[in-house]
Length: 473
Image (spheres, rainbow, N blue to C red):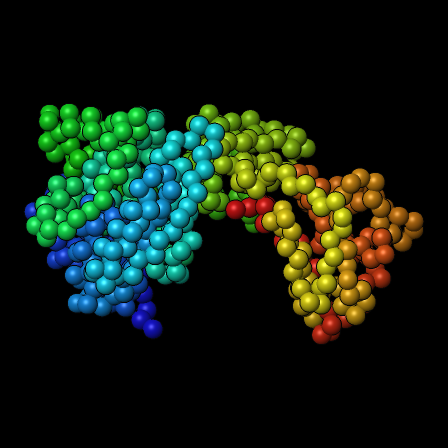
């Protein structure tokens, strides 16, 4: 197998957003040089194009197909059907037919676009699209999109109008990590007129989405009304704005480096130590929190909530269990730890009315509706002696008043949990394991001595693990 050379975002800082010099002609020769600049040698690499069937992605598909044999890479396309327009099925068929004509496999993926709160239709569709693309990518694959210079200008203007800071104004990067894959935007230095010229010269057709003519959408209004007026006064506005975004990207990289240095002593597993964050100056603290929230896979909070996190939340008493929530994310305090959660992960899931049956000898992991899981992990030094366990264990959740056996009498489960490091909001979701209506284990926090190994190592031992998938993204 050919070793894939990783993409190089640092080497392409100014190439990311265009230095302002526009190439004289778009074509396969220019594209080959651009891809080598961003990803190194293409030989043996696996490329996947996000293919809408519109002008931009069609031009990129044609140019890529012309390079495929010569450069020695594999190429496929994925078309996302958002199911938002009556013609979406026709567009999908046309995209597949275009790809097939170029001998490029094309997968059609239908998605459900769900809007949350005040989210715009554009943002909801984009979120659904990238989630689907990420899901259908193979490890190490390069995903290409056809964003061009005008797309970059629109992104910068939208960020400016929303009051974004350095991360937003640095706009789209040419190279971005996407799960275990890489996202490349090779056309950022190319203007749309060059792509149209390339398409008309070769005589291929493309699909047009009529919603692109609807000025009610912010991006369409910028594209159809604002940008033409700007270009009439400043013809090179797209190139010069991209150059500014490149300078901001360099500043963003330096801020990210500073944030990592600020966080180096604060990491505590999936959490941050509040006492360390409170020693940072306020601006440095906010910068560090922005990066950490992004690392946890959460959408960025607005400025008001970021100020609340960096100020009152970190200043709250350790026993206050304070939290700050925004659309898509939430931070919570527990003692000296700051924990991040997705909002969707925090939605209450009703416990089952009847106890669950777990045949642990057949199914070592039992998946729960909440997204958590309970399992037995073989371990010669584990504290569970498997031979003592009944073949079927029942599982239920706290209802209040539960007690477990102790050396002298019994202990309330509530008291066990209060002494543990488990955050209060997770205590009601801890699974209780029962045999003959008696609690034999409380998650992976407590185990009845009757089922414990005697402190010696052996092949018939295991560790009980409660996998809290909702604790972090």
